[in-house]
Image (cartoon, rainbow, N blue to C red):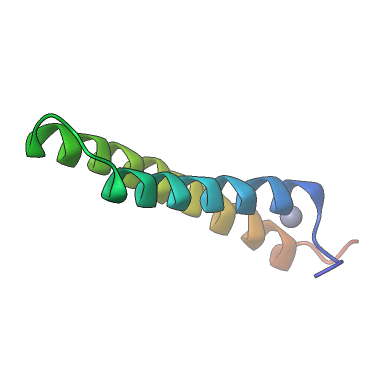
Length: 67
Ligand SMILES: [Zn+2]
């Protein structure tokens, strides 16, 4: 969509990158299962925060009548 502001694009990219990182961990091989799970939880946490930031930012668009 062309109406997206730079901040929307930046946050959406952050979500996309974090999802790709989760996939990379899932496919990757680690010394132990515990290490793999730790990495996975870490990446999922980053993704959740990125998603929350995106939604929080998008709400500001609906709230403002301007632009
Ligand atoms: Zn935006």
